[in-house]
Structure formats: structure tokens, C-alpha cells
Length: 168
Ligand SMILES: [Cu+2]
Image (cartoon, rainbow, N blue to C red; front, side, top):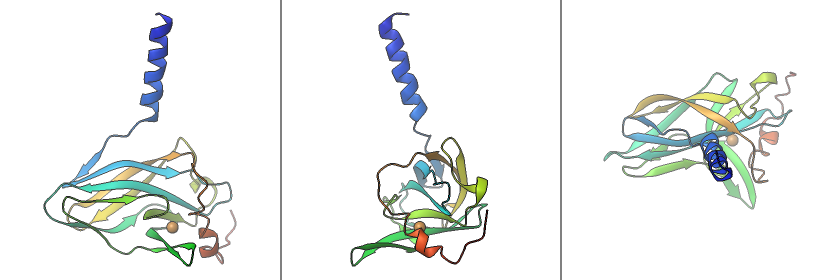
């Protein structure tokens, strides 16, 4: 193998390694690029994200999320008086031909009450089931990624979680 082909092979491996999970299709919905952020060693909460595209001609709605963790909810981050806070998002409409994006600073799946090995580490996947009004249920593995950016969108959980000081 020449140097050049080695470099190409390495580049290909890197690209493939990062990937780019396959899209998940359920009914008319296509779920793209699911991931979760790693959690700090003492964190009690973690977030997961995914884009949901509705390719159909009828609207759908994200009703609920379930997972094998102490508590899981769909949250939205809202900014009020310059302070970002999170609250349960309730049901989220997904317009026909439209998309909703769960992303840091916006809608997200929030796992709460994490302890010990429940915390998220890079290389693991976090499993959760999304429940849609029309498309039904779909279980997704969210690969855990290293945190990027310094946004404190999950930091607010500190205040939400006070009073939940069960030990590890
Ligand atoms: Cu949250």
C-alpha cells in the first residue's frame, strides 16, 4: 500500500467511525442522527437529541418518551429574562412535511435521577422509546458523545434536582 492509499484508508475509517447512524423510519417519520451527551461524574441528569422528519401528508405528534431510568421526560428549554430554564414540553406537534429538532438549548429528552453506572459514558448507547400519536412507538439507541460547546443548558438541572439527593 502506498502512503497515499494508507492516508485515504485512515480518512475513510475516521469518517466511518464517526458515523452517522442510519436513519430510523417509523410510519411516515424519519429519525436522524440520535445522540446523547456524556454526563459528568456527579451529574444526575443527561440529555438526548434527535431530528424527527415527517415525510407524510398528515401531522403527527410526539406524545411521550419511556426509558429504563429513574425518570425521563421530553423537555423544552425556554429563555426568560435572560435565564434559560427547562420544563416538560408536553406533546409536540410534527407538521406534515415538517421537522422538529431535539437539540441542546431546545427540545430534548431528559433523563433524571441518574446514579452510578446509569450515567452516560462515551462509547455506550442510551436506549429510549419515543411514542408518537400516528406512527406508534419506536425504540432508539442514542450513542453517547463527548460534550461539545460550553452551553450550560443542562446546568439548570442542578436547581431542578435539588431535594433529590439520594446517594450513589
Ligand atoms: Cu431538561
